[in-house]
Image (cartoon, rainbow, N blue to C red; front, side, top):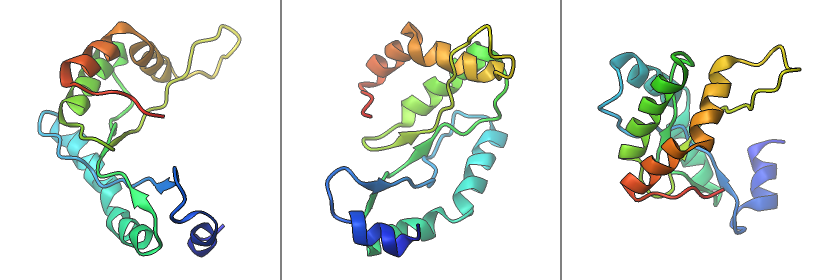
Length: 136
């Protein structure tokens, strides 16, 4: 489905928006992770935002959650803290959690680490610390 068709069907209707990958400034993250976020942004985020707005869609103001899928739960928790520290209303935080299941031999351990952090007390403490809530 092309953008014209999406516009015809959904533009201006409540609850529909286009995800933008315009990166939120994240000074406390390692330089290579900030660079990766900028690369994703430069792959067309600004043009997509302009196209969306031109066609009646709103977009999220910032994009968070870019990292290298390494480090386990402790490292992921530190990334989440850094992202939430700079998060603003309407921002999107990308994540790829997956719950461990003994029959799933293909599970990526980092996705399981994401699940454990996002489903646990650590995430809720960060949300409370920065006065944020999750909206789905």
